[in-house]
Image (cartoon, rainbow, N blue to C red; front, top):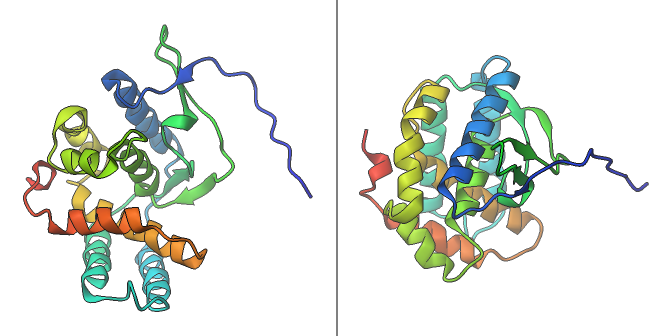
Length: 219
């Protein structure tokens, strides 16, 4: 059966990923969305089930079932278990092509709710947004990603502007490096499951694994 999606006409232009105010408005929208939909916290069982699933999947692919990628999961697991993490609703595809902003009112409208979940890991929407932002469709992707990791340009401005806001929202200092490493590996694993190649993501993961001193790592 086919599905038909009906949406009211929403005002706004597609968010400009190179516009500081658009990015800030989008992050603030996400924080408000999560605050309005939060319902308890991820349990220890929730966290362990998530990690177990990824460990089980990575074991099926020898080319990525290697120590340094297992350590990415180790670090992410420790980060999850060390913190009390809110459980919130999940948009499922939160990035700039699905974000409309009314330039006059600054009102944010988000479209494409096909992957919506009532409860999910709250980092997923944030990381989807940040990773797409770090991999703008303009070229070269790797150079943009490297500059972002070094907190150069607009990405550095955004992190400096929002890091304390995000820390306050989650209730602890988030480690974006641990989270981004895991999220990129997550993309690679899903690509393997669906028989697709993600050489670009593997290249980005290798870059971030070699990056030790970042502004976003300093607490």
